[in-house]
Image 1 (cartoon, one colour):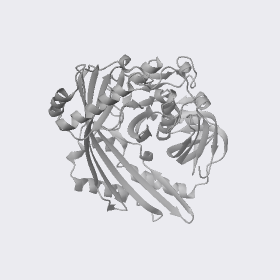
Image 2 (tube, rainbow, N blue to C red):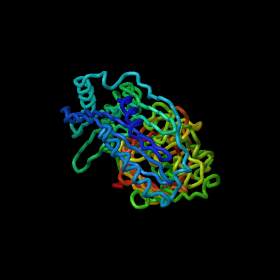
Image 3 (cartoon, rainbow, N blue to C red):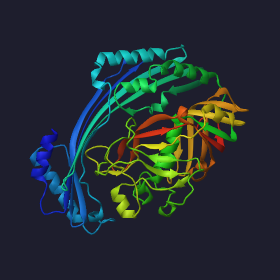
Image 4 (cartoon, rainbow, N blue to C red):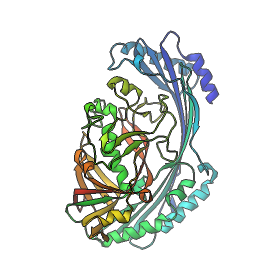
Amino acid sequence: MLDEIEDLYRRTAPAGVEATSLRYLAERAERVAVRQGVLEPVARSDDAGVMVTVLAGGGQGYAATSDLTEAGLRRAFARAKGWAEATAGRGVVDFARVPRSSARAEHESPVKTPWESLPLPAKVDLLRAACEGLAADPRIVDRWAGLVGIDTDTLLLTSDGGRVRQRRRALIPQLAATANEGAETVRRTFGGGAWGRLGGLEVLEDTGFQAAPARLAREALELLAAPDCPTGTMDLLLAPDQMILQIHESIGHPLELDRILGDERNYAGTSFVTLDMFGSYQYGSPLLDVTFDPTRAEELGSYAFDDEGTPATREYVIRGGVLLRPLGGATSQARAGVAGVANARATSWNRPPIDRMANLNLEPGDSSLAALVGRVERGVYMETNCSWSIDDSRNKFQFGCEYGRVIEGGELKGVVKKPNYRGVSATFWRNLTGVGDGSTFQVHGVPNCGKGEPNQVIRVGHATPACLFAGVEVFGGAS
C-alpha cells in the first residue's frame, strides 16, 4: 500500500505551488474485555486515509480523504490548494517561513511478542484469569479486565524529497475492582487505566499485570474499612501513577505553545504561562527537571519524527526549576519566534498536526521511597488518580485519588479513602521538596488526551518517580 501511496502522490500533487505534502495513516486496533468472567463484545477497527497539504502564495491549505484512488487524491489536493489560495496573506503566520522537511527515514517501535501472535481464545483466557484474581471476596461486586492492542503505520511524503515511514505498536492493559459494603462503594484500578506502553505482549510482564489483581482486590477491601483522608495543610507524597496526571495537567498543557498563543481558548482554555517567562521563570523548586523525550522507546508517545517531519530529540523544558522552552512545533515556533520541540502531532489522517505532548518526563532524583517517607512528620501518601479539575488557564487545580495512607513521624500508617488535594500550578511545583530515585521511577501513559477543534484524542507517555511536596491543602471525602 505504501508504494501505491507514493506513486499516487507523485501523480496527483499539483504543480505551480511552493510545496506539497501527504501524510498517510493506517491504524488497526482490537479491544478485548471480560467483566465478571463474561466476555464482552470484541471491538475491532481498521482505519486508513491521507491528509494532503498545499503551500501557495504564503497560504496553507489541507484536505483529508479516505478515498485512496487517483481521483480521490486529486479532489483532496484541489480542495487543499483552494484553501491555500484563499488564506494567502490572511493567516497569523507566513507559512513560507515555516521550515519544511526533507527527512528520509524509517522507524519502528521495538516489539518482542506481537499482540497478534496470541490467538483470541488465549487472550480471553488471560483476561478471565485476571478477572478471577479480582474475586477475592463477595464484597467485590464488579470485576473487569481489558486489553487494547493498537498498530499504527504512517508515511509522510514531501515535495522537498522527504519520506518518513513510522510504525508504532501499543498495548494498553486495564483492570478494575469495585467493592461494596452497605452504603459504601469504592473502586481500585490498575494505574487508573494509564499503564499503556509501546510494545507487544511483553508489556504485561513489564507492568506487573498478572500480579496486580490480587493486590487491587486487597486494597479495595482495605478502602471499604478505611476512614476518610484527614483534612489540613500538610506534606503530600505522590506515587508515580498520580504524578503522571499532575505533570500532564499542570506542566504539559500549560506549556503547549498554541495554547499560550491563544489557539485553544474557545475549547480547552489558555495558559497562565506567557512567552516572556521562558528562560527566567522559576516554575518549580531546583529539584524539578522535566524533559520532552519522544526517543524513549517504550513510552506511549514515542516517535523518531513528528507529523511535520521534524526530527524528535530529547529536550529539557524545565531544568533546575527554571522554565526553558515551550511544547511547540515548527509552525508555532515560526509564529512565536521561540525555540520549541518536535511535537506537531495529529490523532489520525483526518486531522492536521497541532502542538501536543509526546513523552513528558520528570527526571529522577536521589531519594528512595523510604527516605521520602522518613522526612514527613505529618502527611498523606496518595496513589492512582480518579478525578481531576483544573481551571481554563491550567493554574488552579484539584485532584482526587483512589488510595491513600497517612504518614506520621516518618512512617507509613493506616489506609485512608477518598484522598484529595488542591493547589495552584504557579506555586505547587516550588514546594517540591523531594524527588524519588530510579527505584521509584515508573513509565505510564495517557491514552486519551483531548484537545483541538475539531477534537483530537491522542496518546501520551509520562515517566516519573514518586515526589514529595510541602504545605499542600489535603482533604477527604468526595472530590
